[in-house]
Image 1 (cartoon, rainbow, N blue to C red):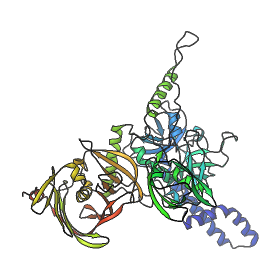
Image 2 (image 1 turned 45 degrees about the vertical axis):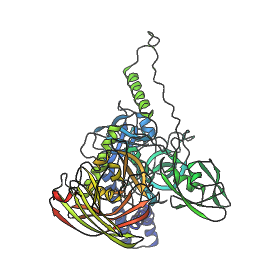
Image 3 (image 1 turned 60 degrees about the horizontal axis):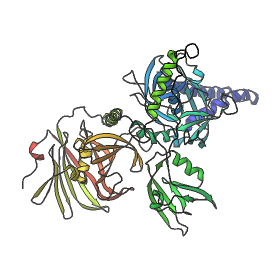
Image 4 (image 1 turned 90 degrees about the vertical axis):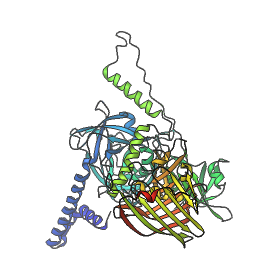
Length: 616
């Protein structure tokens, strides 16, 4: 909350007291009028925010248009969030009511039983009203928070109920429902009224951004009414799982084969599975956990809250301290916390005259709904459930990138001539001159130290020339050449099928690149050889920002592969390039060579002869 918002909200709370007291204490009338105007201004701003976001809130129903739950649309394409326990009750598809009074179809894309989040797709409009996800790390105790949704199925006209309160706590932990399900780690506690039916609905900041998804209230032993204790899954946790949910997965949360405990005010490893990944990486009994994911760890609660927000497979960074004081940084992939989901029984009793009459239409529909949910939840966690749907969201992600760059659907034939400096250990080492055509062809002259190369792609074949010798490269050889990875990635935004020579593409899931959340795309060719590209969804401030961060022939930057990072994307006469690139290796992307932009110019058209494979 900004300082102005805080001041106005404080005035709103004390205005009535102040007006009465001012008369008793002899305050002049002008002061009271000014403060009342400030209060009215705040109230008008609050009402404006509500009107701005109310259209994004969904009243969620099953196929029978019964039940009650809530959701929120986070993208104009109709991507929306709700709780896993809401879709578990409603089914894999149903109806969603919006404040415009209309009902729209929805279907599930992916779900997170552990963190109680599901991603659904709304259908029926070209563009939906939406509310952006906020950076929930900026939420503070005392901030105003608005909950919206469909409590007690009150929204007969589909207009959501709005309740206002404050953030009562952050970094809260709420135990799950057993079998690692519905665990609320690092969540937000609010006193905004959250009741049955609010589940899955948004918790808004006063800027109209989604800071969390409401999912739980402290109802047990108090009756099914709100008592001022509600919990919302933080938006930053949700962001970490969106890539896996878009990939149509049933996701798992990550964990380590180690248990930490507090000894002498230090978080140390108390038990450990021998030969586990984290043990092989260097963690031993008695080691102190100094930081996890670059966050200092002082309590067990800090560690648990952080690891709760990360998906299975996430390459986590740990800084550990040995008993002798020596510190070591290690990287290890988190393994998944398994679920033990009990499927409902779907058998109807046999017909037996008056004793067991034929099932009613409602019973038949309930049976069909249960069967669909069983089929949905029977997918192995962490695997792509629907390849066709996965391809749809892979294309959507690439379209988001193109749309953010305002690139023409069919760009005019052009060639960008780019000059870069090459640095090794931050010292000048040579020059790179590139010609990148908008149809995907390229030519690179590389001169660094004693290495003189000419590398190109003529639209069908990759080649490399060293001295008087020219060699045509296989797809595998091309993928392991960092200069080619660099060129293919910078041209990708201008192609309808980026990296097409490297194979069929899919959205592989969530990962990290340049120490930030990324969607990992995977390309597999006819020989089952792979290639990866990491694309951001949000910038460092949590705002939507789709850009390639890294591309590689290997998953974790092994030395035998070719891994290139990209930053400082900018326009050069309508062609977007990364002005800073680096050839890196390892989990922590250790820089081997840097390429820094010097100049560029645009050449209309494409010179066919420029990209032909040279003859010896």
